Length: 294
Image (cartoon, rainbow, N blue to C red; front, side, top):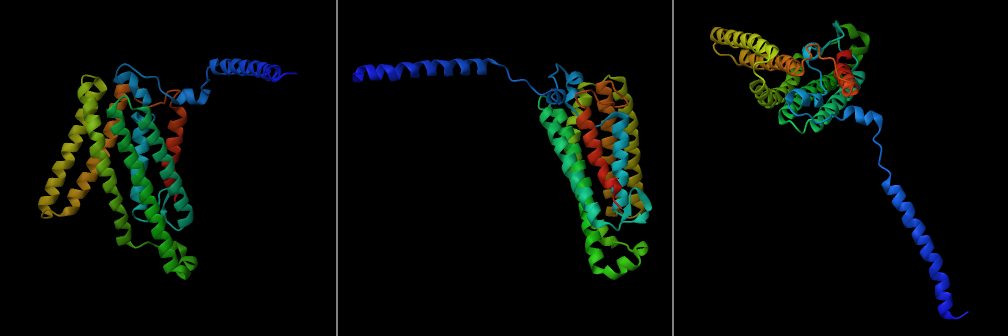
């Protein structure tokens, strides 16, 4: 066999294999990739206006959101005085379990709010409101971790006392007050979130629910500011009433946002849609974990 014949003998099968390979590649690339069903459910469909695009917002609002916020405020209040939210008569004495609950709550709540921000990229107002809720999740989680760390530190300092008389074990009040500095994170988040919320109210003014809740919460906020002014006059402009007023207005603002979003969605109870159910339940579960600190 001549060299030329050998070359043809080798080349022709190679061409056949190459053709088969290209055919397989064409067949493979032509097949569309199928999105998993669970992923399709949590990716919102882009809407044409604010009423339709609120579907991207996977966090609680309406009556459910209001109850969730009240539970959060209650949890922060009890933890800040060293008491168990689930059993207010009981002092906190389980730092390791409380720390685990706080970390899981912080990671879970923050992750879902960040994912909601990504889902809402088509509307900057929802991004700012979701960032506001992220600040609340961070505040609750960080304060819970801080208190658990104080528990652990006090336990080490008074180890014998802790095990002999756990019912009288208590945390240092000044150290607990120091944990309240985490509320600054929430106040900053409130300022950011109110920018988006007020813009939503301006663009949707005329909706009966939004008008009504704006008047109600506006009246309550005016009363809080007026009461703070009177207290400051009596206490010679002490800093505590002013700080309490700022925190109270921040708390009221979050409750106000629940009803504004409910009015925008036409869903006063706040029942999640099918594409938000998984994230909704996961968020509520993560936010409630510090509640079970004991």
